[in-house]
Image (cartoon, rainbow, N blue to C red; front, side):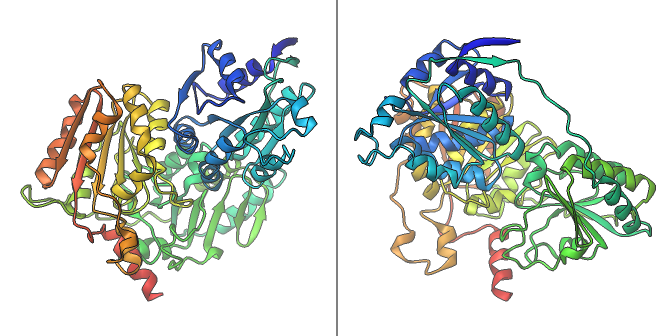
Length: 545
């Protein structure tokens, strides 16, 4: 059935079908027509941000929690401000659509030296820039708008990478004729029989098998399948720095965090000593491998990626879900050796009166977490401390260890809470990172979000101090009066604010989240050169390589 619909409405319709309920961004003269059309669309809410970079981070956090995110910026100045955030989504496989309001097509054709351009009549410059970042780009015209929207969105959903649409002002309200979208189930891959045979041969003799899961397992909706496989077959499993939260860290066969040479000795021996390591959606980056200090020959890794699987140095063109289903079937007939019982360390304790430090702080945070929490951690001491926590089974974890753009966490937490209003977001950010994107706290207050911000004030860039010359002035940051921030950014809005300096104060502050109404802002004061154990362990492992 063919219907007539405005381009803007068709775009919103397709976004809604992808799961989008909130559209992030910053208004600008070239996108105002699109935003006016959005106000007539009651199923998607406009959610303005403090700046375009924050909008990109917010859309990223939203997409990680909900499966798809989108933002709107204006031509040139707006879109380039957002580009770093969109690039992070590309690096970490986050499906985000970047929509850019642009000058009318007729004006572009005239080559007029418009504002927000270089004044040289080149209106495709920014599209070429985005082509290096996005999985698909398009300049919409009346003739191509509907088909290009479908093409770009389809690739974003399939590849889990950003897309880029340029929407000229005079195309927004243009009527297009569209057919009802239809979906087709992909045919089974031709490589499946050969893979099944090779896998069965590989597991013909009882072998020691373990499983690690990376961020791509969650991006490509394999989290539930992977958890079920670990439980059904009793597989030993370990979490990674990229993919934290994918596995059930409370499962009886979960042994902890694998970080190459920086792993706990028992974890390193358990994973690297296996005959076969199932790696689902893993990218073996410097963060994942502890600075490439792992001793895990790829020849004994069953490497399951979104669109290919590698076994015994042979590649098979399989989708991730196909490979996992086949693996599950083969494991039923070829049982691996039972996982060796793993004895976890007893729950750590802390002295309530002791001044806060990087050991006790993460013990306290870990004990405060529940199944309903989503931890959002910035890069730096915050990430390495939070990553070492054993998460509750239902808790989520959001971070950016590959792209590593500091300041990401504050807008990402805003987007995450928007996407998952029934969850409780715990944002953990350092003072140095917070300086970059603190403006988004104002939007959290504006929207009455009941999330918790735990700001670690260690007087500058501690992670950089540990790398080189700790006393250099370039590691220092301006001293803000952090507890005044919510009152400054949310006039008349409810918030609970406090500074904590002891273990007991932090434990009580986090326990009070159960009765929380509105934003809770906790400033935790820490020694300047104190660092999480995992961070120093990774540094030591790299130095010994």
